[in-house]
Length: 182
Image (cartoon, rainbow, N blue to C red; front, side, top):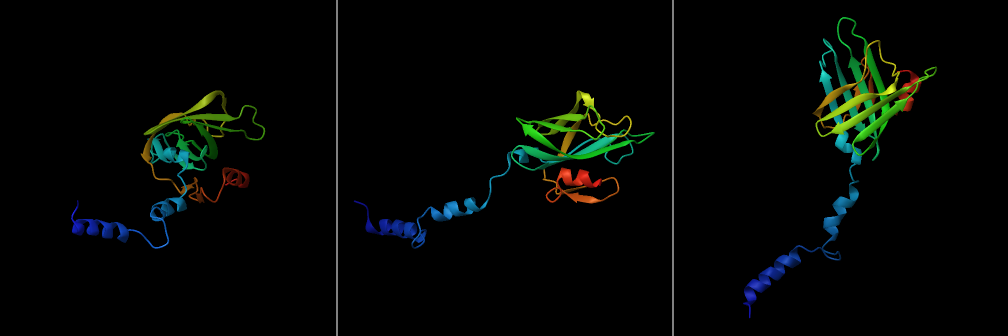
């Protein structure tokens, strides 16, 4: 038979952890219930770059914002470098399935449209234009096609356009942004 003193001490410790009129598991489940599960696309969030981000040579920046479990918002800014320094930028939505995103859009009067494929990996995203669908509205000789290395996995909150105007991902959809001609 066990001595009474250790048994009483163990019983006191167990009882001290319980709150009156609540099951013992209530405090363990309540904090988790208040937090929503992270979006599946959060794994792709962040800033990706290639080439020269100071714009003295060719380079580009891609910001990826998780919008839903199956979509991300893309803010892309690319330059073909000297001597012309033609630019390309866009703010669009991509549908992502099994690590591959697809972004398609078409401008008025454009017969082919633009279709981009984004192949995500933990440290990079490879952007490629689908054959026959390269009318993306970029400057002459500018293409989004490149391997962009991930430089940050933090969820970006905003992006800046060529004039320095800031746009917040959460409050401005691509449709709103592109309709206003910003």
